[in-house]
Image 1 (spheres, rainbow, N blue to C red):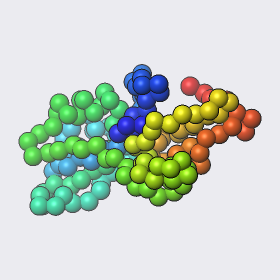
Image 2: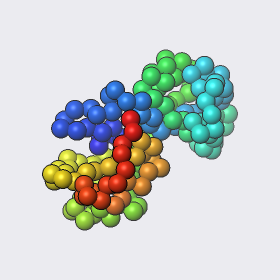
Image 3: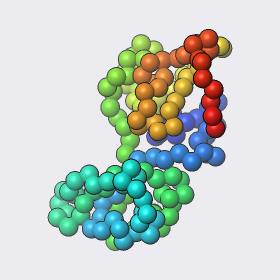
Image 4: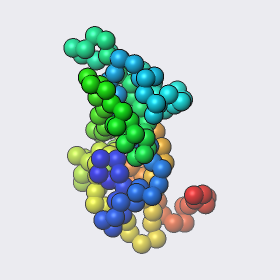
Length: 148
């Protein structure tokens, strides 16, 4: 996992998927952007004032690669967009057990998964309790079917 993107055997696994990443938009008026006018409250929400810019607010926005590129093309002077990388180490006991307490939710690996085991990731990665928290799962413990 590098900057929130999953790589499997060196290939960008997320490339063909519609994965949303979290960004911080600083602007005077978020509704002025066509890309985000119809976003729901789950896709954009206020995150506070911007230091040293009294007229700007920060918004947390969840963007796909496509919407990220569209919003970048629309950015107005004085506004900014930055990727939020989760650098927290909370609840990451699995990584510590593996001898890598420096790994984070968005930056870890490489990790070798033994045959007959799985490393599972939620599609809403910043809100998922997955293998980053509880570790590798043995095949015989899996009772569900992946729907894609």
